[in-house]
Every structure is written in C-alpha cells, then in structure tokens.
Amino acid sequence: MKVLVTGAAGFIGFHVVSKLLNAGHFVVGFDNLNKYYSTQLKYDRLAQTGILKHKVLNNVEVQSETYSNYFFIKMDLCQKEAVVQLFETHKFDIVIHLAAQAGVRYSIQNPEIYLKSNVDGFLNILEACRQNPVKHLVYASSSSVYGNHKKVPFSVKHKVDTPISLYAATKKSNELMAHTYSHLFKIPTTGLRFFTVYGPWGRPDMAPSLFTDAIINNKPIKIFNNGKMKRDFTYVDDIVKGIIGISKHPPVAKNKKPPYVLHNVGNSKPIKLMAFIKALENNLNIKAKKMFLPMQPGDVKRTFANVTSLKKAIGYKPTTSLNDGVKAFVDWYVDYFAEKNTKNLEKEIQEN
Image (cartoon, rainbow, N blue to C red; front, side, top):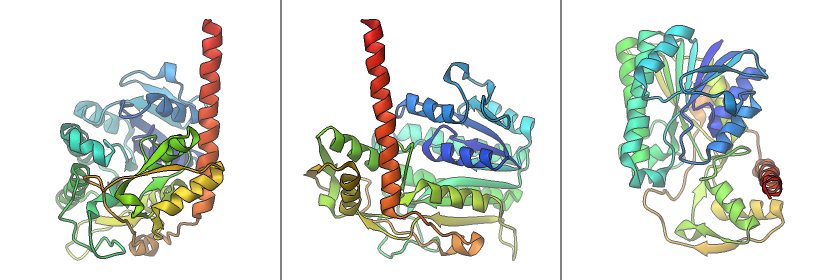
C-alpha cells in the first residue's frame, strides 16, 4: 500500500510509521514540527526512521537513510495547495491522519490554534481526499468527546453533544465533517477515539512523562481531583495495532448509510491514577512526592472504552499489561534522557 501518515513526527504517528515501514509499505509522512513541545524529541523520533534533522526543509521531500520506502516532508496542514499537491503527486491508497494540535488544557488558553489546525487543517485533508480519491481515510478522534458522560463503558453509540473542552469540540467537529464528506462524496472514513495512550517516545506534556520527570528529580507530582481519577491507559503498541488493522478494512456504504464508522481504541480496563503512579514508583524504585489538587477545567474524572465494534471489525484485543507497559516506558525514558544529559555535558566540556 501507499500510505500517507500526517503527524509522522508525533508520538503515535512515529510508531505507526515504524510499523508500516517494517511491514514493507510505501510511506509518506508529514508534520509541521511545531513548538508545542520539544522539537528535538520530534527530530529524534524521525531519526529512528532515518530522517536526518539537517536535511529537513519546508515543503521538500526527504528520503529516509534507513528505509528506501519512506519519504518525509515538513509541511503544515493549513497549507491547502501544498497538501492537495502532495495527494496529486502520490495518489495514496490510505491516509492515516494523526496530525492535530494536542492538549486539553492548552486549548482553554489558545483556542484559535485548535480551530486552525484541527478544523481548518482537517478540512484540507478531506478536500484533498475528495479531489484525489483514496481507498480509506482513517483519522484520530479522542475519548475526550465523551466529556463527563455518566454511562460507562463509553460506547460509540452514546451521544457526545456536550464536550467540556475546545479540544474535544474540535474532535467532535472532525467526526461530523468526515460524515458529511462520506455522505456527499462517498469517501470511506473511519474515526478512532483514542484513550489515554502511553509508551516509549511519549509526549512530555502527558502525565506519564510529567510524573516520571518529577519523581526522578525529587519534585512533587501534581495529582488533580485529589487522585480520584481513572484512565483507560492504553499502551501505544495496542493503539497502533488498532490503527493499522482497521486501515485495511474501509467501511462500505449500505442501506443508504454512507461509508462512515467510528471506533473506540482503548485497553477497556480503567486504572486508578494512583495505581499508575505506583507502577512508576516501582519501576523507578523511587517514592513520589505527591501534591493533591482539585479538578482542573476541561478534565474528566474517568475514561473507559467499550471496544466491541473494533473487536467485531478486526478482532482487536489489547495485550500489554500495565506493568509491562510502564516498564517499557520507564526504561526508554531513563535511557533517552540520560543520553541527552550526557550529550549536554560533553558539549559543555568541549566549549570550556
């Protein structure tokens, strides 16, 4: 298959690209490499797939040094003409759209960025798919669309008309926009509502990284809602399994319904936040200092995925236990940042 992965330098995007490349698919990745969090982490992810930082230029395709079947381009979703041109050039079979402005709390202070990237940018992807038909558009939605839904586990059959953050509202908008294009132009679209993803190469603004950094540096970790939170923590390999698995099964129009579907992708086993912290402590062999705080605006108290529809579609079954997943994450985190600190020290010695 010829696959486009947007957000290819992101946490989930990097893992999806790696899996596709190792399976022998031709992949084009793009990412705007914005500064929402460390661009160096994004470049380091790219380096794992053979894309070297010094070769990356705006709107110029770079071929991987490791994989002959991988090309990367630094480009923004909002560059409509460039996006459409990319589609015209490559004639993609499948588009896996993961690029977005992430972060629930950040959306409260910076709403304009979310509308531009998550709504305008997604419209450009839909338009490119309309002008250059693809076999399947798979796009990232989010468990945040459920808000504080009372009924659990969260099901794609539940109404999600009451988002409690702008980030969630943009993701719900994506689902509505995809439905419209599936209806009008028969584009097969699948929206995936991801539940709290963690693992190696994870985002530094997410709880696993924030907690781990604080614990290692003997600083208190901020625990909101006084620790009375549950999250459907899902290891990144299980998320990727769902993404790539469903990408091979585009929805089909039937009974006057468009080729449009939604799935939850989660572990379907909510874990108490304090249990996750305990797993971090055990793997780091350090006791965390804890600062208990009230609930934050935009946060939800619990997430719990009903993955029945994805299981029925592709036999989806997450297999990574919490202990195994946290160990893999902690091992990567310690190695990665220890190496960074060593490099910084070497640089200081050379300069002095």
